[in-house]
Length: 496
Ligand SMILES: Nc1ccn([C@@H]2O[C@H](COP(=O)(O)OP(=O)(O)OP(=O)(O)O)[C@@H](O)[C@H]2O)c(=O)n1
Ligand SMILES: [Ca+2]
Image (cartoon, rainbow, N blue to C red):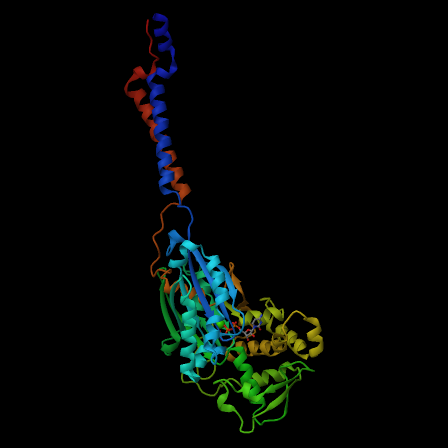
């Protein structure tokens, strides 16, 4: 009996200090575990949004994804998937509208596979059409309505949350391109200086930038104001309808064929290039239809001369610099404040300059012009040999397109040899394509809040560390205070 008692008395587990220590440790572990679990970032689940970019030359389907818990907060929406619709843009189906709808099926089927099935019903689906449909709508509004009806019917067959198909205004197209670029660069959330956006399509082109310290209110149609993440922006934007590169090519050809010759020697095409072209096809667009010469019925020979300087002269003729009712203008009497800041130039700006290997921002403008002049002067058969992988239609037009880009930027928008170096030719920013689609979706889903979101003062790891250290300090203080208040704690129980 006494031996048993002695054992119990000597067993250190039975001292009050040990018991308090064990309970204390358990309490700390419990406290920290609760803190960690309670505030642990929830398992990542994603939400999705689909935007169809129905451009003048082609349609592309974009799927964006973002963390489900952070819709309008810290998570950034990113491009998850892109599908290029086969064939031409929806406006080319004016005479066979049902085919416009059918053309979208393949990419839509792909989208069904890409978005998890359980998210299908809550995934918004938008279609935005740009300059091709703007032109068709001007030319034949009932044909454009029929294209939309067919497209709508085709899209509604899919299990997504269809949100409508419509033509974007030029202002929206420019502004949403600017939002995309600055959102992807994290410039909006951080309130940093913004980047201007230059978008070149087949049928229109957009320029959007913030010109600080210049009052842009003299032309209200070119001014868009936003409040994003607590910052106010007064954006200048303009969309030039008919100034996409396909329509400008029509205008340049219309100018050269206005007297109706059988053969034109075009400085914007390579020497040795020769193609028989149709007058009626050339003039089949509201951008040139009023210039159709009386005698222009059949075909003409389009041959190349390959001369950059002369090509620039031809291209300049598509701009009108004669009148400006504002304090300053770009061309065609359109207001433009002083250029400011870096610019991102995407879509056809990028395709063309990338093909010509002229995207290096450190290359001076005069070198760009020199390289372009050499390229244009290269005989057509050599160009074809050098680029067997590039479709002939694209290949034939790069000299023209490069010359148009340089002329538009310098003569049109007034970029100088100096400010030209502020232009970055870009395709993607952090894996998402630059273009209006992301900005459009962010706007329609209210994913960019007007005010800066409240963020927790501490990151999660910092929070857990502070909780742990505070608990340990409290525990040590508690033990020390016990020893101080009741000195008997200092002695091990001693039984005689
Ligand atoms: N690898 C490529 C892809 C496209 N293009 C050309 O780029 C132009 C189309 O650019 P894009 O930005 O796709 O225009 P859309 O969106 O179709 O037209 P818009 O914005 O005017 O509606 C067309 O002339 C097309 O021939 C090109 O030169 N090289
Ligand atoms: Ca476009």
